[in-house]
Structures are given as C-alpha cells and as structure tokens.
Amino acid sequence: MLKFDPLVWLTAGYAFATPVIAAAYWRSYGPSNFLWLSDIALAFTFVSLVARSSLLASMPAVGVLALEFAWAMDFLAGGRLIGLAAYMFDEKLPLPLRALSLFHLALPPTLLFLLHAFGYDKRAFVLQTLLTWAVLLTCYLATDPEQNINWVFGPGVEPQRILPPPLYLALEMAALPLLVFLPTHLILLWLFG
Image (cartoon, rainbow, N blue to C red; front, side, top):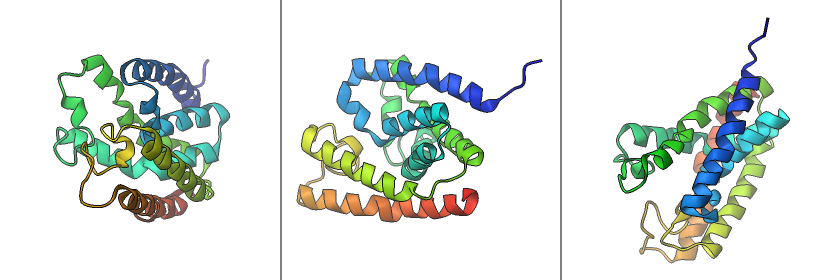
C-alpha cells in the first residue's frame, strides 16, 4: 500500500507548475517579469522542496508571506483594495495567463507547511534582505519605469512623482526589511523556530 507523503505530492505539483508558469510568463511578459519578488519566491519554494532545505523555504517565507496575504486580500476584493491583484480582472489579458497567477494563493500555505516540516532558519531575515536589495537595485537600474517591477518607481502601477526616484527607492529598501520582513521573521521564529 502506498503511503501518502505530502512533500512528495507538493514537489511533484511544483515540478509541473513552476516550469509551466515560467514558460508562459517568459513568452508573455519577457525575462524582466522574473524579477518580481513573488516569482523569485516561487522558484525558491520549488528548489526548497527538491532540496528539502529549511533556509530556501524560510527566505521566501520572510520575503513574501505578508505580501502574498495582501495579494490574496486584494484578489478577494476584486483587485480594488490596493491594486496588487488588479491585473487578474483585466480582460485584455488571456484568462489562462491570469489563472497561472493563482500560484499567489498557493504560496502561503505551501511555505507555512514547509516551515512546519523543515523548521524556520533564522538566517533567512538577513539573506532575504540582501537578496531583496539586490533585486530592487536591479529593477531600478535595468527595467523600464513603466513596468514598475516591485514598485521600485512608486507604489502601484504608475511611477510616483513626489520624491526624487533614488530617495523613493532608498525608502522602499529600508521599509521592506523593517516593516515587512522583521515582523514576519519574529512571528516565524515564534511559530517555527
């Protein structure tokens, strides 16, 4: 009799879904789309499943759990709450392409399950902060402001015009670790440390 192992099934599911999502996104949005923190978190989650790595599960948990919960709340509100999931209701985008973004709903429970299974690696806070800073700088220096990947040019779809762009970026680079990663880190330490 076969024993049900959720890690095996999760690994198989992510082994199928991650390349499908990657191929569709590459074709539709181009390589810069992989700079979104959520897409990076999806890749880390898949690799953590394959490697059974606490650190590789802990980093995206610190980095995107709060953001994915915000995305889910916005999705449930039809994309009108904060605009993170507004594209899911844009009928100009093909429905199958939008459906692939439902991975945002799967990431939080997957990451919480992995932390339960592997434990939380406290190094994740520092490493995720360094990774995020590198990604934000790359987005700022190498992408079009109209794409506004990871909101490095302003909150929402449009670049902001109030602050000088480098100052806005510096504030975002300070705010994410202090206001998102650190509280998440402390909660995860308490729950899974």
